[in-house]
Image (tube, rainbow, N blue to C red; front, side, top):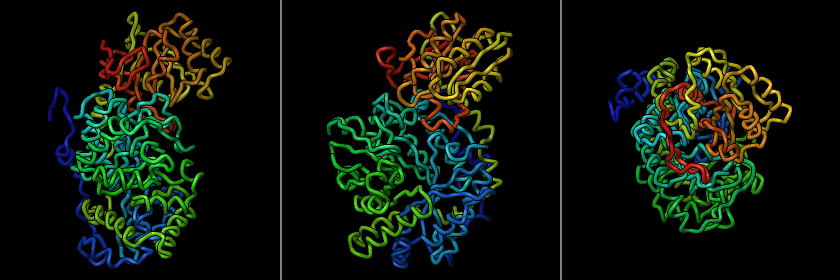
Length: 580
């Protein structure tokens, strides 16, 4: 299908490759033992209290040296009667499929034999969880820079095809947060941008596509994590804007997701003072039941963010927070600790149900939603994956080509004074690639494009010392041109800004690339050439190879397609982007 000059990957195209989003016939299995029909009320009536509360806890899983799920994972499924998993990061698609299959076999061996909902974080494609052999896609802010809902839909098709082939049913995307705070340390490039309309449009496009492709979408983090100054993994953030700002800026993407048919929404560990000044959204009846359920009319499944994050764990602890989240309106509590933590969460719900502090009606309501989701997405029929199909689907050449086109469409040329860029790929010039994060990965992509030699320099930390900067300048003496990649997930460390300025002072042609947040330019505003890639999140161990590859190609003359999805202070407005 051709749209706007770009050949897009459609669900039909995926099926035409023999990569249908349903599993192979030989892998199909009934939803429970004995081939019982997928009847939610009948299943609920047969369940014990222990089986019910097990369905309300999702656990992160572990692995053995051979890459398969460990015995603690088996015990969580069979002894705690867990109904869903957040899968440990398997190395390859085939391993991921075998991993999922083993968990499903353990689940099928339980009394009811209910299938698991197997889930993963897929914000920039399945590479987010399965790092080898999959297709890395631009982060959400890159998709915001590309400004094309068709590309957002295409990214969802690719993600769903790979995820389904590996045995996943549920993905924690898209991010529906509006990143209005440039200093936000944890959302940043995970958001489509700073404008509500842009975020809403792309969230809606992806939710509808995931629904069609058979992967459960989960817009997050309700009611918005985009204006926070702290990382909820480390402490409890609060947002102080008024109700009108919440309604105008932060809620519309979630309303768009609900309108698009989202079946699941994830909560934020954030205190939204306009609704509940005392409790984070995850634990607040005013937010989850009052706002999300009653005011916004969402009747789908509410899943919490990870409950071992310090914002929750350090303030309330596992037992209390687990029960509070369910009482507030959540249906599934995400437990990302060890087996003892999982057991504590299940026991907390069981005890609360037994002593009456958690009503049977509240529990049945949530379990009915969990079972209903498994029925709607025919998880029993999609229970097992074919490892060979997983390898064939994931990272195939068509997906890789399309990902690179998305990367080029996302890469934003912000400044190019004096025609510093593009560099000449065919010259014998020596290029120095300097940086603080993922420098060698980027340098390898530069070397793949440039005919001349490429050298690499990287500091030991994200904040280069004066001695390190002096060493970088010394290395630059033999270079003809310099690329310096800076990274921030909040304010740029001062050493990186000093590095750019020192390299610029050599008089060599210098281009800076922000590989994380696009705001780095404010710390070195005199650099003559500047590119934003949006490729790296706060978790720098996760590498988006597509964005490194696209950035290298733009440096050497391929046309950049991106426009800023955020404002860079008083330097460049939202929507700015240059072309060669």
